[in-house]
Image (cartoon, rainbow over all chains, first blue to last red; front, side, top):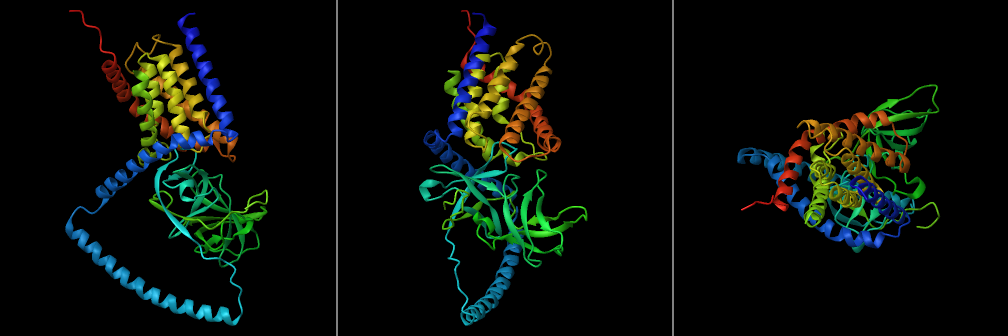
Amino acid sequence: MNRSSTLLLLAITLILIASGILVLSLGGMLDSAQDLILRPISAIQSWISVRYTALSDLLSSPGDLQSLQARNTELEVEVAQLQQEIIGLREEIAETEILAALLNYARSKPENRYMAADVIGVDTSPFIRSVWIGRGSDDGILAGMPAITERGLAGRIVEVNATSARIQLISDPAIAVNVLLQNSRADGVLAPQRTGELWIDLINQDAQISPGEIVITSGLGGRFPPDIPVGEVISVRKRDFELFQQAVIQPTVDITNLDIILIITNFRPFLLDGSE
Amino acid sequence: MAYIVGIPLLAFLSILQSVIISDIAFIDGRPDLVLLAVISWAIIGRHKESMVLGFFGGMFLDLLSGLPLGVSAANLILITYLVSFSEGRFWESHFLMPLGVGLISSLLFYVLQMTTVFIIGPSFDPGLMFIRIVLPGTFLNLLMILPTIQLANALDRWMRPPAVRI
């Protein structure tokens, strides 16, 4: 057998093995093997990620003491302002609670429980917008759990291994989030574009939307809990000949710079087969 | 020896791709360390090894990606086979010829990935993807291919020192 035939035979054999693995993986038969391989890989990924983040923070932090002191003063002022706001908000919450009690308002929404997770890497394919976190099924993470930051919705868990999980970001075109425009009360669906822009599509033509309007999750479909901030409308695209109008939004979460993510662990998404 | 060094190295490069390389994006494209390593190994003439390493490198990439396991492995095997197909015929004639190999390999790698995403995911504009991901990614790969080949050559010499007649 000459050299080119050997190479061809090797290529065909390896491609057949890869195809076999592909089929088994799509059938979910390699999950435990994947877990086993990903355990050490995730550990190394976490180790490198922590050091890389620390190094990159160090390099991007202010270089001299004077600017650090100035920044500290700024932050102290900001903290004082925020504390004042918290006091005001607490007063409002107390008032709301009294009003709700008076109206005998049924509180059906349970208190969310959160689990913090470090972002340890991003998807190796540039065509898929997702990140890896350093927590997995060992910590009780399940597929479908929403991922948020203190600013709003970041995505949802789509793949879970023993020690790591993959979060599909709200900028991934494959994600579908039912949203509500807070002022106009119009429903829509988040439609991320490959350019990175986030659009809200399927908004009724009659809805009066204006830039600056806050977009939150509607909870429709049961895949995300309601009332999580998603973004703010920056422009509206309305054409008379179209059935729906669209809005371009600025996400509240900086999805290009995620370090820590909170997973809502007590939310069970409603799946199409009716299970939870 | 090549597999003992190569497989852990490819695992490490996949992790670097996931943790660090995302910060070196040009538009939405990024250099692909595993692709560069595998095709460099093929360009220096280690064809059989590069195919096996392409299989493992692709598996590591898929483990850290939303792509189905095996897709990148099949892509890399195909690419390394194509690189080996014209062994020693034209790219050894000029030192810049590896750039041509890098260009074709990189484009093919992205097009195959894009096709997979198109099959498994939502519809998208291939032209836009080409401009935002494929071309910038290919450009970054081309910037890195020549130094990577030098590194591959150095690694090869370290693993297989030339026989010396005394």
